[in-house]
View 1 (cartoon, rainbow, N blue to C red):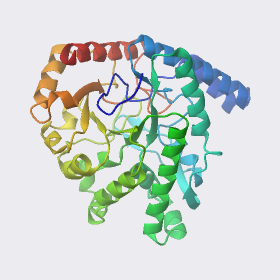
View 2: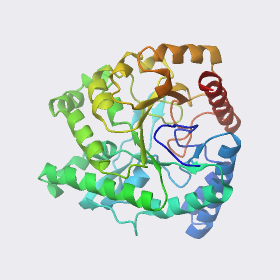
View 3: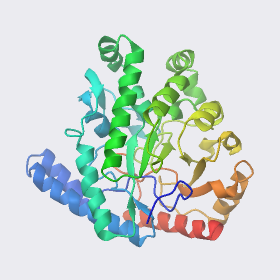
View 4: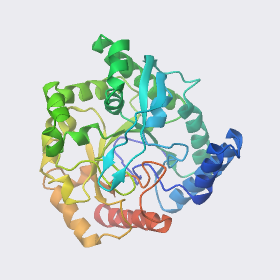
Length: 375
């Protein structure tokens, strides 16, 4: 199997529910009952089983389910030189609960070291698993550079950023280089499809947030230009056979969300100017707005419609989904559209309120609709 930029293939957004054995092992490790090697052995087995399950479900590209992470984004940030794990004292207020208060803060200039960033060794194992199983390729998911900017400017984290980088242009250059180096390190280990997960744009879709003091400040700072600069700078001058996806999310924690709103406010920049190959977009509820902004997707870029929710286990009506795909094709040709769930099933290790069986039934529905609509 080879990846080409002309084929999306059947792929899931990224995260899967952690199996009970893995959850128990993580709890035992935190309690000091098992050591790191014992935890890793459980993770290895869980990832191997997951890849086999994804192959059996018909996926062309597997993820490791993000099984070694606590969060979809923070664990990756903590692997950079100059970034540390800390607690900010207040989690995010999602629609039905508050998240934990972990965060990432700068301690020095940021850089990437392939010898110390754990995700590179993690990918080596994952790639070897897909090679051994055969017939399925690995997809690596990481948080977008814009998401790192959002975290490092969150609350009191801003003070460390300002102290270490009084020259913000130097900061932007270092973030772009750290990400570029990381992406190339994955590539050198055999990654040919990398996805930048990005909630930073999601805030800018929400009218309530934009009316807040923080929202007004971001608009005044032209933060969309900063997001574009960081994301595009990181993926500039990459190998031609490397596919770059992005997934734009409005928050996904324990079946709840952070923001609402259509893509209209960011379409010119996100869809018109971000130099990715494929957009994975949330479209599973009225909170996502209309398909009209898809007309702004430039060039031959693709859009994967997240019409199947990962937030609950109820299966969607396939005819309704097919009708919505046809509606979207009024704005972007059908041959540049595809289908997925709206997000992962467990963006944090808590997971969404859905069973493992329901998780696989959701993917079965996605596959059957893909086969019917695109053949």
